[in-house]
Image 1 (cartoon, rainbow, N blue to C red):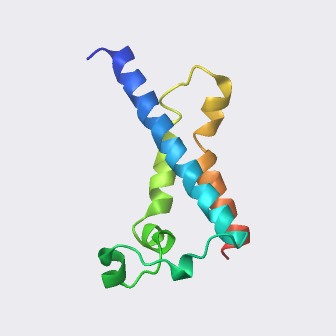
Image 2: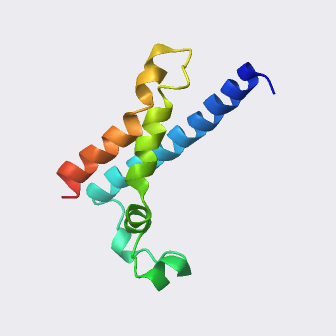
Image 3: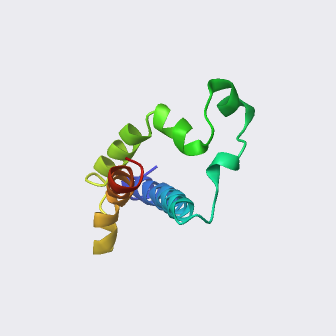
Length: 105
């Protein structure tokens, strides 16, 4: 596999992960707005066995912040073709930090 094909595969994977994180951020905003009620949500059995009520608590316990930091640092390695995408690498980490600082203290 050539370098350009590897870089393209990384870009595609990154774009899918960015869409996943933006969807998660939207769900957090809807929860804060009172539209969603995560306390009423019953997650998969592994969450219940470990004592977590929702996916946010489970993700935080499994090192989500470290993953987001590594995800943002990966943006320094893969250069996007559009300028705004270079900045978007750190968007999931920054938005998560803002959510925890102001919304979920």
